[in-house]
Length: 442
Image 1 (tube, rainbow, N blue to C red):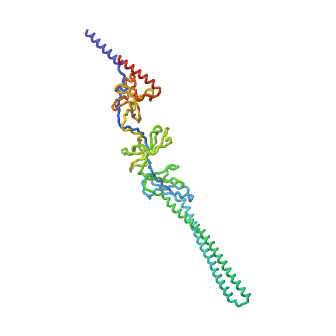
Image 2 (cartoon, rainbow, N blue to C red):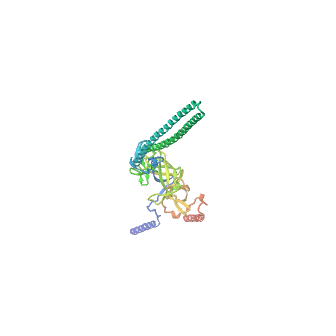
Image 3 (tube, rainbow, N blue to C red):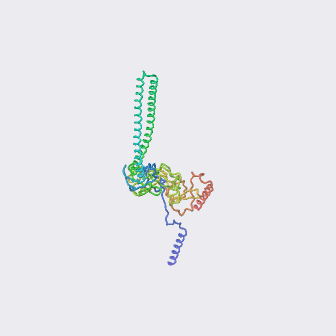
């Protein structure tokens, strides 16, 4: 009897184990349900991307663009300070090759000497010609006086002699007048010659002076305090040994390091969220402990394709509000654009959301309900819930074992605001709820 009772007991235990194994609820893949509590507080929609620092304002350091006036098309950089060198106003930046312009200057100096010699020769010739004319006038004036004196002394001579003397006086006066007219014309001619030679001398002298001034500019100095940054030309960075065109004689740039900006590129999927005036939180890869703030000041209207990338991106400019001596051009920044910020909202993790018929968004509550929710904005991790949940509610992030046996508890506020075909779904859901309640009663 004792053995028989033992067999019955063991058989009962085995049956109970089989029943438990057959009807036990299914568990999640890791054997545990994952739960999360509904939170209330500040909610941010953030777009995180990397950027590169640039100076908001910079001054271009240029060579002598006036050199093209003297047919100097290009000049070579013979010597240049290293990129990143901090210079003060007036300090040396680069030295340009003067050979071509210096040769033209020597030719022009030779022209100057010849023009100066011509000027001096013309002066001597003018002085000599005009002096001869003046001497001739003086002689003719004496001639007139002499003829008048003879006429005066011949008052008692025969009429023929008197008439001859009168004619001699008239002839002497006419000669004097002609000499005066000739002197005036000669003076004008010689003055014109001197003006012409003087103008030529002045032009050549001006060109020589300008060339000498331009030669001084072949030693390029800093127009203000700053850090030397190399610029990009057709052959790469402009540096020692590079050629610079006199039509675009930019040698380097001096950025104003007191006001910096970060240039970043936003994916075409997120660009619609970015607006001018949005706040930005920045970090520096070189100085992780340094935190900065900025503001979006420019959003490109046209996308572009960056190297080694298939996605289209849009350039966004962020002006940094702080000034820091650690900031340098080309530093990498981490930019977090605050696209939207709400102060007091209810939100849950995105993993808690489920969807039915593309019209109902719902969550699984720990209380055993499938609760419809009205959603607001979302970020990378969470989503705002406008209706359906309260702070402190506990939701499933995994699918509970009872998920298929419970209908969605619909929000009355959304009736008529879903897809038109959802009326049938709502009716079917209500029928399912009634059936489920009947089964529970049984």
